[in-house]
Image (cartoon, rainbow, N blue to C red; front, side, top):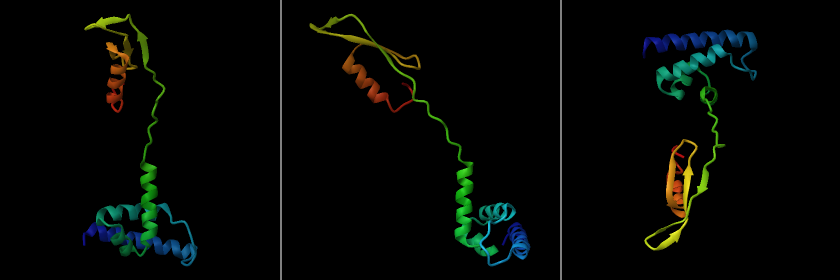
Length: 135
């Protein structure tokens, strides 16, 4: 076993023994941050939550709960703004190959310009690119 792992496990056991002497061993209690942080570091060194928990005599359920909470605290949620709109403007009707139809001009919030296409074709383009951050 790695000497760093041994040292850390001994530290955790000593802090735990001191804490249980002050609070009592058979009571439900909130574990001190000093133990939680060291156990998380031990998990990284050992590479296993179960292995780390067994080394220091703490239930694996407690360690999994601590790990889950620490991951949730480290998660940074980003706000997504969906308030941008697309402007569509009608243009003059122009015949192409003998058929008359209306074309549209679309300017996206990012400044892209789609013009000279029928409205149905523009909708197809926007739908095809809708999953990207282009529009």
